[in-house]
Length: 107
Image 1 (cartoon, helix red, strand yellow):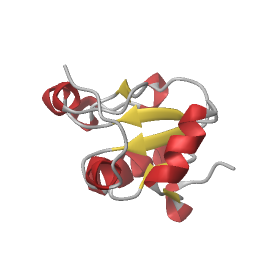
Image 2 (cartoon, helix red, strand yellow; image 1 turned 30 degrees about the vertical axis):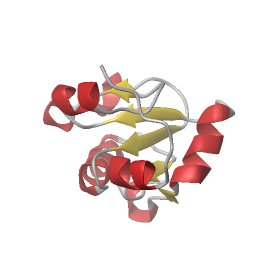
Image 3 (cartoon, one colour; image 1 turned 90 degrees about the horizontal axis):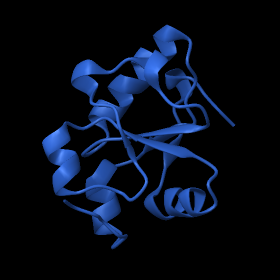
Image 4 (cartoon, one colour; image 1 turned 30 degrees about the horizontal axis):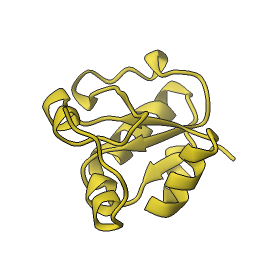
């Protein structure tokens, strides 16, 4: 189910991991390129908030991701204003993902 930012769904880390494994969602990372290089979730697509354009997002059920959840909510607002729905965002961002002990890629 897709929602607007008014009712933005909070994905928990394990829930997102399962959705990614099942190819149910497309993960869009809105952090900056240096943050993405240092630590990212395998399969995430980079669309930095500093130059974020909802029209450039890939097709599919989009889940937004940032460091702690603030920028992903901002990106969801931009999507909402542009008429682009998103499935939700990773509650707590990369910090929550790391705290859950889930795999992180770098380089």
